[in-house]
Length: 557
Image (cartoon, rainbow, N blue to C red; front, side):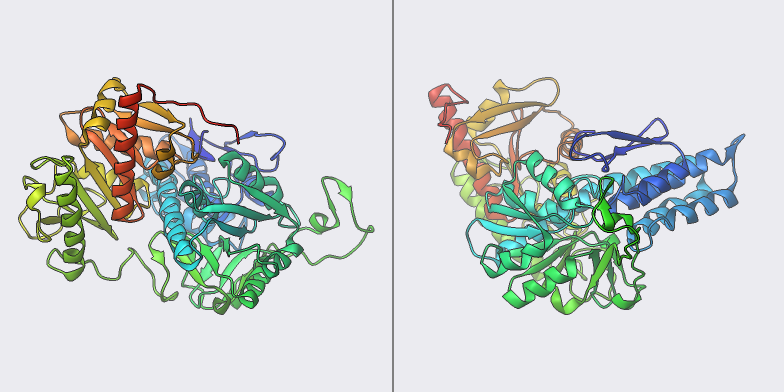
């Protein structure tokens, strides 16, 4: 299943059975509604985004079972959908996912399946966007040094479908070389932190230490924590956050010690129909989860328990809620993009972006990387991107020589009459699969030569090892990087399609790539970072040309 924790195969929902971790990576194949409900209730599948997607496919399974001679028993499907939605009451994503698929019931099973598949693909894109936004915020709020962060429960690919939310932000920071260590709360009583998050940290190569929940406040007091980063199961209209039990006490401790408390979640986790956090129904779970573990009793027989699965943190204890649309302002207002207003081509926001793009383009032109009209640069603005116009010399570019395009389909949305660069689909492919703020596509000679030498008929990768410059490329490892090499096509949108497919399937791919004979593309949290990564890649390719070696030995320290 690679980086995704959920898949749809031959009419069955296939996922990771989280009850078996960390000792066994076991696949769970679900083919009935009862199995969907059992998997959710027993926490074989858990995490708000993940159970939302499973709920969506559960409705598809219900529709398949209720179809005879091409006719769907809608009453039966609606009843089964209600059962699925009631499996866990606190996480709003479950009912949301169920309703997303159920809304297609009148169009037939194929339409329902297509909607569930779209929700699955959408989740990975949304998680990465939210994670990148959160990583940007954490770096703005904290000291400019490798950070020590604390997280609770599990919010990675196991709790979502790919990448993760709060853990996604940790992965982004780790790729940037900005993360020193993660302190992982064990997360009583079912130890999702110890069993699942520690497993994901090790899988991703992120330095971490496991601690008991009651040690977290002392870690803050002894200056071992720069920020707390958690996920959410529901966010109400007053900004209150429902999350795994133990989150509330972390927020109180963070507030006392002046430490940022960041919540990372998709917009689908927001529930503005619920006015206050006090209105949330908190799930109460079985006493056996507290009185013992792993079949071993740890309390006297008959001991009564208080075992809420979640708690609710009031908004005044939350530094920021971050979704795929950035930092949340008014928690009572629904959002469909990162900005309440979409800037026009003549607006000041676009002009400002255009000026930055033009300045960097002129510098790259002077370096010989954007000769004549070749190459293009873009900056994302919510659901749109500002990109260099087609057919203009990059050495003479001005702030107004730009086109605003829609990220979703690469089409112009302004009235300037100019055409966007031919490679626009490459840029939008990155924006749809990554939380990048800017993309640079250039034609430096050494990197372009390497792309030709390593090209194949399909996507390949080329490895560089031992070069100090790898640290500037956003690699998960500072000493080694595998960079994808895409085949060139006369039909440029096909290149964009190849890139989007690859980045979707490889969430850990570095933020740089080669296109054979067609230059390199780099992206980042800012235009300066995207340019810097392109410069690092070209410099490294020049070194490999001079030395004849793409891999050089390094010490073991």
